[in-house]
Image 1 (cartoon, rainbow, N blue to C red):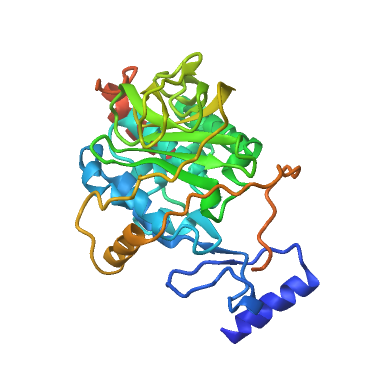
Image 2 (tube, rainbow, N blue to C red):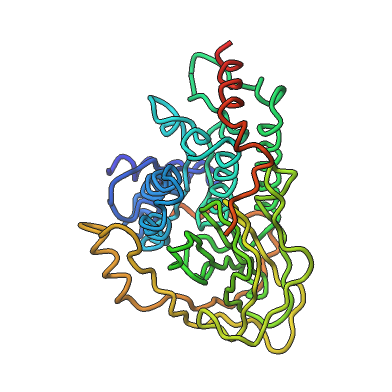
Length: 377
């Protein structure tokens, strides 16, 4: 441990712009805190708990997800205890664990929709992002260090090209959206809207930049059900627009969307004075922005949205963390700071209808086998 501390101090002394990232799976504290504060001196630490929980969750058939809702929300019990990276690494797509797209349950269409929805949630979750090659275009076979990636899928199958286009668009949205990365490591950059809708397997939350008026609303639906008239509380009176939708037809989705402006209503919901009704697409993540504000400023009240233990009974470490989180003071105070002029985030200082398938459901098995034949050819 002393060696690693000395190593990090030396690295940052001679190469202050370097990044030191720990792939560390224990509960050893202060991995990403400076050595002079008693830490190990790394910039970031891999969030292995989030990775394991979410990969188990998205591997479940959607019908069982409402009993495992805690796997989606539990990461926020410790999300700001370190400077975390959310890894989808090579370790999870080898040795019989299946590729990311192969982990997804359902038919051919649902596999791609599930992966797009998961990526959308992952990109909005606090923490930096790491994706191993091949996941961006949904390679079906596991990674093989002796062979190249299955680039032939992009030449021969439309859904893989659309998945790659989705990954590009999602990355661009992330880079262009300060709310997703400017305040990544404390509660000032995040607030729940509703973490407890386990019956519908939907989570909704807000990501915030340093400028309190710069925020994005995120809704993730982990079932193949379309929800019309779905109501959520919002932080300001005015009109909202959908700015990103993983169910877009250009990405291989069914095209269920919220066109035009969504006007807020004077109907309290989720401990907020204003609320909106929207349509939530199947197996999809959508992002909303405030287009026009009416009346007083943006409000981020102390919310009652406690994370309940929705799902299987928690035990051991999870149980203790859940109890501690329920009794801990809420941390939703908005930090008022000037809007950063930086374009990119600075690294921390060392310190109810079935989803439309477009016949994909009927052809899924055959198409998957065709792709496997191409891959193995």
